[in-house]
Image (cartoon, rainbow, N blue to C red; front, top):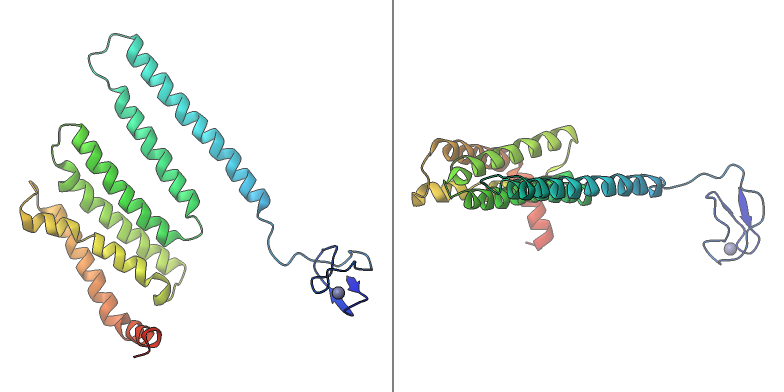
Length: 221
Ligand SMILES: [Zn+2]
């Protein structure tokens, strides 16, 4: 325990100066405890592994493109490997950056996955599988993972409300495509839209009251 003669306070954390007057402290540091967890080690370890991961991604891309160019292949298959590696790297970056907020993470992954699927479909001759199967599957996966996160973390409705509504709103894109007649295969979009409507309805019926009172409080109605 350290002591500030000036302010006559005991300081429990292991610091050299008084937090009030910035004066020097007397006493030894025995019995001091850190108030906040030390995250620097975790962060530097993560940064180290991320650098290795990035290097492996670049290595895989260069090896594939070189092989593709050096050997007599008919197609530029390495471009697909390149796109796949880039997608995986981007998904990892988002997962690491948003790791403190899992719902935000899930929402970002959903949007990125849909953009990647549509681009991929477009690059491979636009056969519409991204719209027919990809988008609905991504929406259902994001919805299920959000519900699991909410249940496991026992979140309150103000905490998850915005992300769940965003996910359900985004999940209505397949429904719009369905109504516009842009799809070749309808059932995946019907299933994913039904899931979104069920979740929205359950949210409105069971949590609508508390959400409304929150809104009234914040809007001063
Ligand atoms: Zn002091």
